[in-house]
Amino acid sequence: MNIDELEQLAKLATPGPWQSGSDWIETTGDDAFDGDLLIRVAMNSRACSGDLQYIAAANPETILAMIAELRELAHQTDCTTLAGILDVARLEAALQGSAAKQTARAVRAS
Image 1 (tube, rainbow, N blue to C red):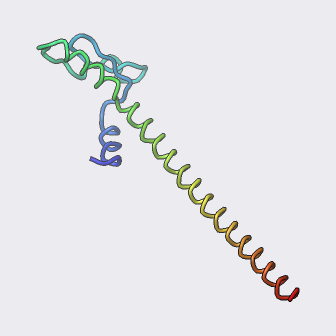
Image 2: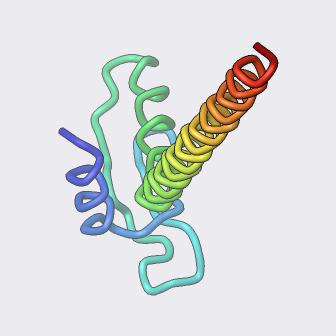
Image 3: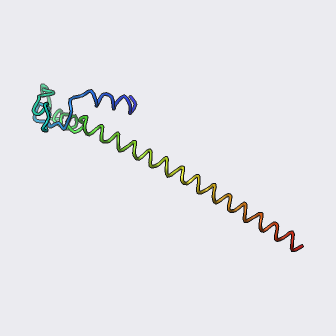
């Protein structure tokens, strides 16, 4: 699964935030889905409680926010990399210009 597929799934899911209980996950918030039961499970072990907390924390609102932050960081990195490349090109041009001036001075001096 890639980030675009995950984003689509998050957009199709019931909006968050979600909260978990001992054997359930429900929506919370002020929208039309407030208090809707999303998942009820038969608990076989205490480990399932951690799973429910994890699922509730990874609700669509959280996933979409993380994707947006990831894309913004990637954009900033691309811009920083591009700026770095441009700075290197300017530096190389300046060094080449400086080397050419030094060569011209050496030729004139001889």
